[in-house]
Length: 151
Image (cartoon, rainbow, N blue to C red; front, side, top):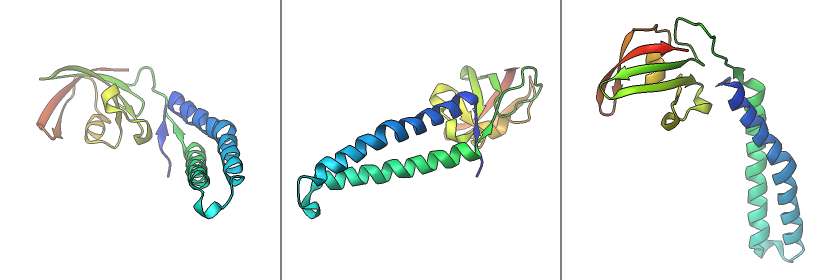
């Protein structure tokens, strides 16, 4: 299933994949080899741990390859009049001013202002224009936001 990523977010995934293939994979293989030399593999905790690390690493490599293969690159249009995936918006509410960037779910980090296009907040902003007001149901109640800027 395709996920949306900014060029920077996709680059981070590619770097993680490279690290796992070229650095972690050989390190784990070395640990397996070293621990196998110790003796009986049935009772060798180091060997079992290294094999578990290997399985996790290989699973993550496969996951990253699938994500990268199916990723849809988003890039904000400089002068869009509507909120799209990749847009950075400024909003005001009774809680003050906030700046959000609408990203795919794989890149979301709400505490850093990156909200998923699939989240209630992201969905509420998509397709809206400057000066639109949106109401979003949050755990603390309904919050009304006014879009003050779209970039």
